[in-house]
Image (cartoon, rainbow, N blue to C red; front, side, top):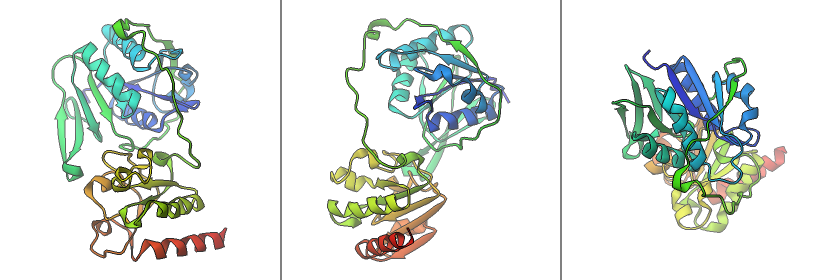
Length: 320
């Protein structure tokens, strides 16, 4: 093993870290002997959680007081790396994560590898990237001096606690925020939803163009609610304006790996399957017996969703 130190951007979320952050901490401890987490906001109170997932040190940027996270966090990471840079910095694929990665690339004069789904130590940091809609995986390797900046897709690894000791919490240096230091978040909006988050749900029920019309998506939502799951969608109906982008599953949407994935009226375009093919059990409903979705489905139902879903809803209600 040639990697000794890996830093993970651990994004705070409702008194914890985001699921992707925990996934990255889990994988980082399998690659390096020294793992540190970098967080902000109330994250300084999460030393026990960081340690449980493998970090020995938690660098706390502190309360951002309405500042755009990318500005002070990138400045702090730059200041930290000047004295003892890590071999790699792992960053979740999120709005803040991508912003921070771009700023660090400019500050550290280092390239960024994105859309990463695999990381290994092969005499140096090697990353894996799905291309051509996931039909092929290519590898890349950092060269030159300086940390490798890696932006990793959600659900690429499994978050597993190691039972490690509480991480030492260290205040991160302020760093020079430069000309963008005055940037602040003027307003923010939290998406209204009920039930679990799409990317964290154990059951996901998704609808596609086979639903026929926007109103039929209500059946997908009802099945998801009855199964205590989350409602997803294919890109086709998101582009058509039937549902918000936040519901989209696929290469340009969210990656999900639930215990059960129910695809309703989704033909199975490669773009969609990239985001859900890792699901443990895939059930597909489609009236086209030759639909590509059946090639990866564990259970396929050849039928009209307008007949199958109402019957499923009645059966679920009868059991509740």
